[in-house]
Length: 271
Ligand code: 0L1
Ligand code: MG
Image 1 (cartoon, rainbow, N blue to C red):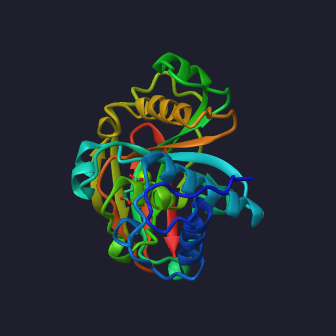
Image 2: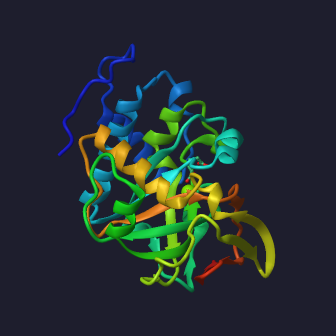
């Protein structure tokens, strides 16, 4: 249960993290984009923004959704520049956000969806605080090619602050992971070509080194950020390491495929 707290920076003293989470929740379920919080008199600190994110996830859990993972975002310099934001962030993933490989996604209930190519990890031992690459690799039981479908509950998919994005669960909407590879120790995870195609035409090409220099570093950064909230990365969680390229706008009737060296293909069809 999230404690109801007043948010410090607001002139309206009655606004709480739960109220802000509710505004974002309603924007999502009603598919009605809202004005950015920071442009609407709701100036959150970083910690308050994560508290709003957590309150939003608590609401989804009350709707019978289950936490299955976390996503890192803004893990490439290019993407941070594109969005004019300054550091990596994370969001939380529920079972309702997970789409099966080779299945369909109905985007009619989303506001302004985009898709981006990622690499995902399946974590099978808990990781806490400052961890090393070796500890991450030892805790990881699978790696997959993965695509994240982003959506924003803000008008024009635009932010004016990191806190706007974090409060909105870091633009999470859905994700699709390809088949998990358990025998990945011989794969140089920072040196993989990634090609995302729409209807057979390549729309984005990148290198896995674009993801935090090495996607494993995203998991290290996630553990560090979770520790700031007094949390750990639990066993059983899927971690999306972040995108290797900019995201691409999604339209109905498209088939999106991601091919990553050494990993099986992942694909979805948009209804
Ligand atoms: O996963 C991401 O890198 C997205 C984080 C938020 C920025 C965006 O919405 O593109
Ligand atoms: Mg992403």
